[in-house]
Length: 604
Image 1 (cartoon, rainbow, N blue to C red):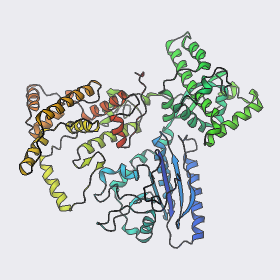
Image 2: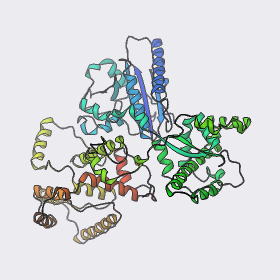
Image 3: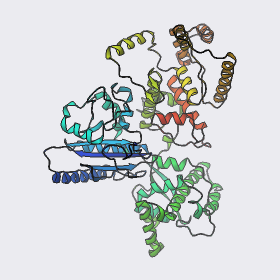
Image 4: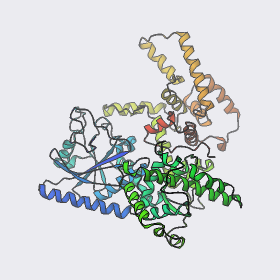
């Protein structure tokens, strides 16, 4: 399938064009009515060169998971523009780095207009979903989001009754004809570009250096082509029996035999390092004896463990390069072909071309070994980080992960709270009806009278959502039962057989107990929930009993459970219980555009 966008965003047959997963696409227009067609081609080429220069200067030492920023001139159905697409694989940071580069590029010319999108559509609007105007919905937002001079611009509806998505040529025509009508919102822009605040610092923060034990030949390859580590780790991470064939063979010749091993600092991205570190991998025949000897080494336990850890990561990395080299001819990957060429040169020149120990020690940063604490979660500091608290004496923001991870986690919890407290939200997101503003205001005022503003998270609603996502029948809350009884007074509702209803409740109780035994749900009310039930005047028996007990106990702020902490902790523990397979938490996080790395079951 040709990934380049057509001017209408549809196939000839009228079906919407589906973008591949984990791929970001971008189109750049120069909109200047005074510019001739011949000059426009030249201007677009100049923009392309500026983009490549900007990317080279900011990402010179960066390792892309898959594709870097790339642009080419397109002439499609009367529209001339620059087009590019980048597959970012498991590294979502690569997508946001491209957005950052494009936003910086847009500041270089007032005539440059940029649109960036992925398989989720206008994903910048997904980031800003909580603050979008009511008229802007996913059904009509296609081609309405543009970046110009570093700012976000929205193309408004021409007619409130005509709610159809714009074609690309219609969007360009609107910008060309009526720039003044474009909508700019500081709130929408702040949310849409929230992840860009950590750039350009994040470009370096995403790197990780670790001492690794590898063959001398591989050390030479990595020194000559550092970016080759990305496809090699991917080959290891996505390995299958066919790609492992050369490693499992006892008679075949290896491109990187485990001999003449050296220990040096290898540069990874944090995603690549985590992918290697998290994988359970049985040493292939060529490495079995080497690993066993490392495990039986005498000396301090700490030194032995450190040497073994470096060797295990190095073994995985070397096996990844082995699979990359053995399949280079079949891979449509420029880096893989360059590695194959380097290996051919080594075959011709012999071992004398390999660097000596003295040469390796002269390489910059050869002994750099970064802290791996960003891979660990300290649950004692976890709660503090969610509240924005940290070690003020040390000037730290938390005791787990890095600053960007903590900020993203806080954002995740905030979005869960906002979603669960949004009465108009469904599983596809907020369902916004285009209603009269006066009606919206009156409804809001009525709802506000009964709303407990001190409660930021509704456990009952969360439990209901989890049940529905996993196909369990939802339990009605006291409030919903009362509402249903009121509705029954004015409308005829079909009666449900009592025996069938009882069977459904019994099944729901059994499934709930099973989920609780695995830590997937925690439905016990917390002190904060009890306080909410008191304030809302709940009359159910369970609320009364727990309320009575709570009134007789001495109030202690330290005993209150932090809902944000429990939510995030339970989500992570439930995700871990999935064992890397599809499950309710993974699916739910995917709905919010969030992905977690696979968990190592043997890790502490």
